[in-house]
Amino acid sequence: MRASSTFTACVFVLALPAIASAEEDGDRSSSKVRLMGNSGLGSPVGLMGGTFTYAPVPEMQFEIGSGIGFSGLQFSLMPKLSIGQARDRLVFGVGPSVGIIQNPNPSQWCVSLWLNAEAGYEFRSVGGFSFLIAAGVLKGLAGKMQGIDGPVFEDHPDDRPVPPEEVASFPILPEGRIAFGRWF
Image (cartoon, rainbow, N blue to C red; front, top):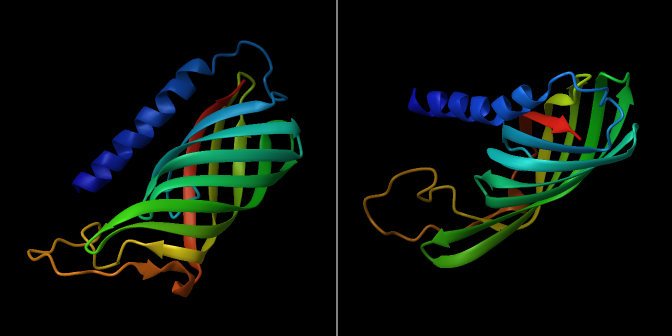
């Protein structure tokens, strides 16, 4: 119950500035730069993060982001194809992300490389407010992340070793995210 309340509060905090600043102050449907707050599971920026998008033309977006997730600090790059009308668009993206986390026992830094693919819907208001909902898949390509039996996932009364997991051995996993932001 507490995790659900925390998630809801975080989404509200991320969305509030974007909604408040999206006053009808001119048509921003052709703006080229966007900042967004993201919340998701398995997403390119993890459980919570931020993204910067540059759209040189309406049909192409380049997104970079960072956040925090189960594989630690996350960094992503995702080119996207964007099709549709000025306000309602379908977006399709494929790109890599990297996770960095420290495994506690044995103590070592774990770096993991992932490939993310997603499809989504984006809404843009006249004032620049943007909403994105996307879902897709991710696949571990290389590296390691904290052991699944590690303290991130379960409490252990003892300090028994939990070796890091090879991410390439993971199956293809689902991912999804929602995001709120503003085009400038």
